[in-house]
Image (cartoon, rainbow, N blue to C red):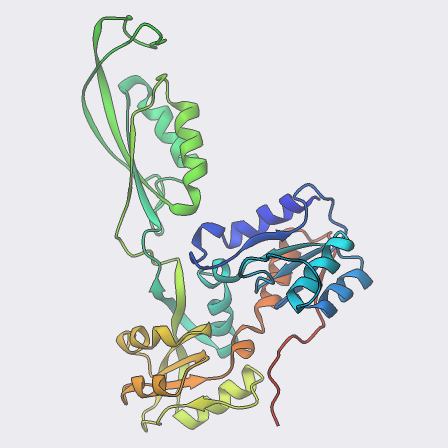
Length: 364
């Protein structure tokens, strides 16, 4: 397999279209056409991780965090980022990062936290906006059925647990072909009226390239009339964080101990305990303080996240318990998730779980 084939498999799980605008995801180092000898999956790409890849003959590193975040103006080896990039290039190792694309994925980072903590009936905490789009096009009535089917096959018309969703109107379209035109119907220079069907379908943002390709390939007209709108509907399958339920309620101290045990946490920083049983839990891997309000609004009893600042703990306002368990700790199982996924997708290929510890924070 070559690099771009592995990337295609990874983007089935976490399309880059759902990464946050500030992020730097995708292939950061390397050649799309390079043959892959082995894959090393890691949370962070550091120098010793590249050494591990070299030792295990893995020339593709799949990393959660991007080693290149801001722009690189020089490659002199003065910083750890520059040294990693140089070493990877010197050894023909490609680096691919998923980061917030996997954060926003329904089966991604936060789903894994829920799994480890034993949470069920999960939903997205912060659905991502503008990820559902609507296509409207106009086609001769005789071609409407075939075009709809092609759009469905490209991924359009899927809403929740339903597929092949569309709405159609019949009417009359008109046009006059210019001298350079090659009209499928009608004559050059003559006003033509055609019985047409107006087709409306929705699709996920990540499917746009495939949907438009199907539209242009299967539409009979030389010039295709179409409109695209971003809808404000909440996308219940894409977004940051998750909310789920414990099978059996716990008291707050018991649940904090449960977090420490299941998440391999050295310590938990938390807001005031409220003396209430814990049943509903919100989680957000990585720096999640921006979602405290959403966690309260969800009715969660505890919000599990990381990187909460001093004053942000006040935002709990005795409505829930904020539990900061550490950035690395919330995301540590992400590489296990990716190894399991890739192993199922390409079972006869060498996929290795990095044994390197990349947590920069130590505890006494």
